[in-house]
Length: 245
Image (cartoon, rainbow, N blue to C red; front, side):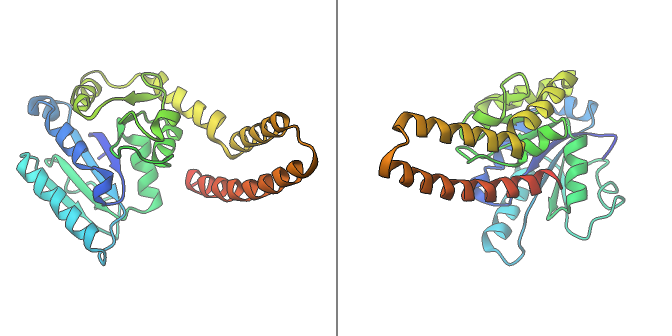
């Protein structure tokens, strides 16, 4: 896959993740451009073979790829470097189930762009991971991406019907290296555990100052702050574990 221009999607195989958007947007790119640029759409993510939705949705995505005239293959664990490159010379879409952390990091660092397909998603770790690897993100302008992605600076916030032209532009012109650098720097500055803890502390101080911070209300506020700190610490540890993989 190293010689191919990878358009990447990483999500669990669940319907709410709206992975169809990545397939349909990729299929809208002129076939001649896809072939000329040696493009490859990689759809990777969690897939529990005991979960009915995972099985049905993965099958539905394969059927959609066929309907869109996109040749495809599916690879499941165990993964080796040769296994992920042997079948990708001619296909349009590669489905990967339950990728290990080393392969996830490799994909995030070598992809041209990450397509983040969910709408109204919460914060979302994958866009941060992509930007930490210097890879721009294309996402729907709703939910977490509104906070984590700077439109036209560290990625692209576009409605679904506008994704095709963005991907076409990426294949034709590539992505400005400055976009990748800016995204990485912003993740480190704004979303590291230290930065998030500092912002939370500032919010707590602001609440105390606006409420006067005196009497019984002050002690209740302190109790709320301690509970809040506990929740935030757990969240920060989870985010740090994800980003440090």
